[in-house]
Amino acid sequence: MRIKKIENYKIDCELFEKSLIAETQLLEKWFTKNYFKSEHMNAGAEVEFLILDKEYQLTPHNILFTKKLKNQDLVREAGGSQLEINTPVFHLKDNFLSLLHQNILTTWNKCCEIAHNTRHHLVLIGSIPQTDHALFKPSYITPKNTFLLMNEFVTKYRKKAPLSIHIKGENENLLLSPESLAIEGLICALQLHIEVPQHQLAHYFNMIQILSAPLLALSSNSPYFCGKNLWSETRIGIFEQLYTFPHPLQKPFF
Image (cartoon, rainbow, N blue to C red; front, side, top):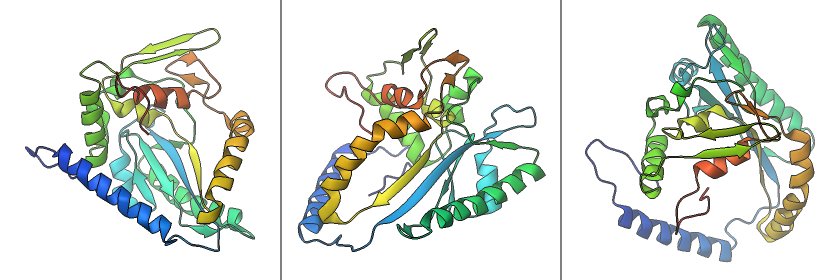
């Protein structure tokens, strides 16, 4: 179910909750009846990246790229300087990694061509090392219903308490009170999504938990943020703290 943000329209939270419960119950029935039965494992990926201007500073021009490319595989993310490449689903067999890479590369090359023609630069990076705090303002959120509503409701559920990020590095500390979720658009990741047979869900879930620590150790690439040397993997801490609320909604909800 989607919620549309219309000017002067009040979101009916009670209706949303009822619809969410109904859809969750329907999903439970589908699982019970094995509607998701599949003999194959599939995989797809998301690659996030940032847009810089000719001076190599972040610039909120993601709409420019999606309008020029007109490709559903390229979508705008939370921050105005952020884009994401989504791949189709591939069967998890044979040369699927090569197919995945080629698909990403095709869209990436088209984005690079647009960047060259419009005097922009693109950067694949976990977190931007240095940035202007002006990019944390609500005006830098991508003007898309999903992100605007997220920002609105995060503010609401924090009971108007400011957003807070406090990360203690080995030698430096970062303490921020960003004005909005636009700060989320300054951190990027490569995400691999795997579809597994329903009857093997618990097995693969447990396997991923075991693999997560060594994979994180191998792939951490976001030690710097806002001019500070912090953790090898700073992104997780930023996400957790952005979406943590006061009691009784204390835990991150994503």
